[in-house]
Length: 593
Ligand SMILES: *[C@@H]1O[C@H](CO)[C@@H](O)[C@H](O)[C@H]1NC(C)=O
Ligand SMILES: *[C@@H]1O[C@H](CO)[C@@H](O)[C@H](O)[C@H]1NC(C)=O
Ligand SMILES: *[C@@H]1O[C@H](CO)[C@@H](O)[C@H](O)[C@H]1NC(C)=O
Ligand SMILES: *[C@@H]1O[C@H](CO)[C@@H](O)[C@H](O)[C@H]1NC(C)=O
Ligand SMILES: *[C@@H]1O[C@H](CO)[C@@H](O)[C@H](O)[C@H]1NC(C)=O
Image (cartoon, rainbow, N blue to C red; front, top):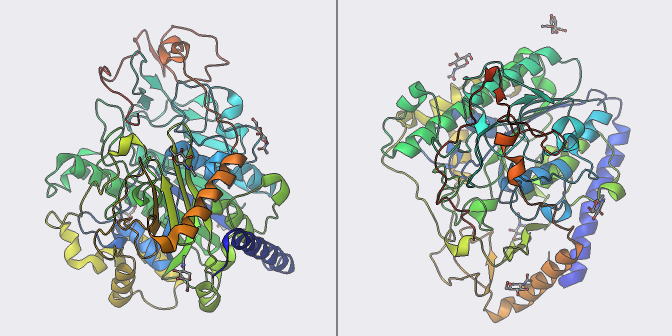
């Protein structure tokens, strides 16, 4: 599409609206056939690297269930998210950019008294009103200082999990990387402290709960289930990477001990996907389900909360505006998608899920009140071959607009503008490589491993023909990222604006900003960033206080603005234990400054 600056932007916007309106019209005429609303099961991984699923070609450790979901469904080829947890989860919940939820700067650290602004309408509220059972299992990270910030006040019927950014995989406690704060226990069922099954491995425990919810539902009511895993975020500083010993042993061939543990963590996550698919089938729900798997942002390879993730071949990592921070692994499967076993190539944003899933469920949205930034991609995702291929409307994504750290990154179609960077540019390179020598023994017959996974065995029942070696090889090849030519023009966004064509240069190696022929695009995008800046909500961030340390609140991360402080120690029946600290945190500094 060739068009000029602002008129072009207007026409993108109207394409977006046309799609939404079209969908609503279609929806109305289909109400009777579609009376049964689809179950929606959203499996969100935390801090998973782009190259840490094997469907894009890595053989270091295999993820057969996730890969099977992708091959039987659709690989989300260009799926983008904000670069870090709170903004990303805010965008998922609201369909808006972080600048439109006040979460554009960093994350909610547990001791900070703020949350996702309560005047925003969230996805679970919308689905709850439409008759869905709405369930969050696992991580929230959108605030808990007051009860009104917590999941069951924001549209979830049920929450089982933790409110903050992360916990220990067994002990369910967390210590913020700040001096003087103690560990705090953070595990709840709705507003009640949840003590049962303490000591169980978190990835399995959350999957148990997901299975219970699916089993209890038994296809009686439309289900919205957000399984928001701890995996593969780090635990506390004393033991950042945690997995069952017998799982770690399966990856003894991986020499790097951190990467070995990480592989085991990913492997439990993969297992979780298989269990969820099997549970849905057992409850006879899969025939009317939409299952999504994705990461919330790029993996942190080094620095704060580093889990040894790999975003190869991209530059950067979590909390950077480079592709390694914002382009994530993801896939979708549903029998309601006509053309499965393919790549979905249009650019997609995590904020698209709200309008997309609402459209899939025939839930009309009040566009004026919601003021969504996300687009409804359901027509394109679910359509038959011809229309799916034509679904290439050039779209915009505000990847980063943080005026505290002075980072702005905007995408328009294939163009990506980057100005400023986090961590003084220390994470602006390719931080990992793809391991070619320590390979998973199962990769000798990759196809058989995928085919024999529980996920493939189950999903095969919904296909007209067998999944064959040729299909899998072809999809895996198509999903392999091609970096194009070598480094041509470098760019240091601390000093200059960078411009890339990420369709042909996904590894951001060829800065076009200084070339005359791209001056117009650069100018247009710079102006657009400024326009977006003018629409930003004020930062919702509030500073933490030592008054909010768990040591003042019974060793808990509690609704600390509403609970009266108490130094009486009580965690799940253990009285009189001082709130421990995970480790000396002297010298641990935030990595961004
Ligand atoms: C919510 O409150 C903020 C101020 O805190 C305001 O900027 C915003 O317009 C309000 N409403 C919505 C729907 O965002
Ligand atoms: C689930 O539903 C099926 C079919 O309606 C029924 O036969 C079965 O007993 C139910 N199972 C449970 C555990 O309620
Ligand atoms: C959209 O189509 C144009 C022209 O066919 C192509 O150059 C571009 O790469 C496509 N963009 C996406 C996001 O698929
Ligand atoms: C399939 O699921 C069963 C039951 O949960 C489990 O025992 C088995 O290990 C799984 N198979 C594979 C290949 O993951
Ligand atoms: C680019 O960064 C510089 C330095 O922080 C800043 O002065 C300028 O306003 C930024 N431009 C945009 C469009 O954000």
